[in-house]
Length: 192
Image (tube, rainbow, N blue to C red):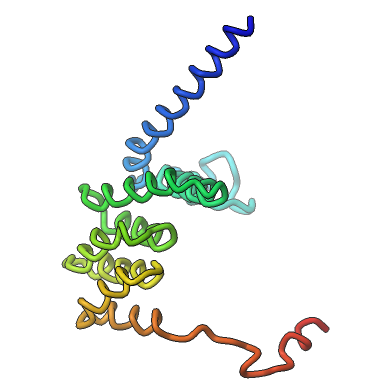
């Protein structure tokens, strides 16, 4: 019996790694989907809930479900401090940027790379600064502004003639606002 339990545990462990990797293909298709029929049905009451009910209509669409799923994967990887999973998520996002996806999907993926990206993703993000789509350029600049390290800063400085990049550089170099330097009694006022 013990032998079978070990074999089952091993099969499940190997199978879950394959499922994790396989989820990415479907995930990109869902991230790039623009089928808002489910949202429309919820708003109009055709989806089983009536309009007066407190619901988030977009939560029923495949695209937003996929976004929530990706964010959950990011959160889980960050909480576990699992560098390999974070690297997998970053690789997925970079590969998706090169795929034939909508500008909205690219902008959203760039936003996520701003959260979990590292120096390794900077070249791919910086390449998006050359896009003819302003939305993608803006998202790439914002993403680079959030990524710590010299590589992202150098990429921004190399493209500083682009208005979105100039704004990102300003934000990146700005000192963090400190309430106590402005109003020393601020913490005491908040605590009362």
